[in-house]
Length: 166
Image 1 (cartoon, helix red, strand yellow):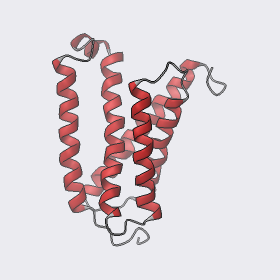
Image 2 (cartoon, helix red, strand yellow; image 1 turned 180 degrees about the horizontal axis):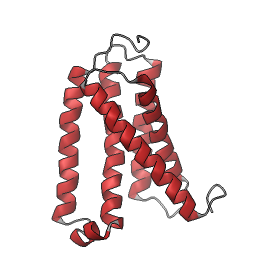
Image 3 (cartoon, helix red, strand yellow; image 1 turned 45 degrees about the vertical axis):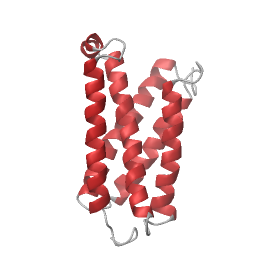
């Protein structure tokens, strides 16, 4: 049991939170590419992304796993993103810092989505049962390339006048 829920129910809740974080993050990143702040959705993305890491930490302890390490990295990146967005109000170099850290947080969630997909979806698992095979590496490489390119363009295009402007 985790937080009074069966492990199965808790896992479902965690997956829903993660998928909401990814979906909202993709829209927020697309918004940055279009130079739009998307204030409410940005807040939702950051909160659900924090919750995806926090709920990941609450699974039964099996020692330090790659998921725990990625969760810790994600939390550090999110602290910087949240400060850049809400503490520094995207001023000066914090605008670019926010874009980069928000994109990294989304990338980490998508990275885990691919890992879990290759682990849990039978057709993908058959292609890369140990996650060292070509299809897995190709999927992760394509994801990384997509995020590097999108982040570079988002840093160039996302230039809001003020966090508080409407």
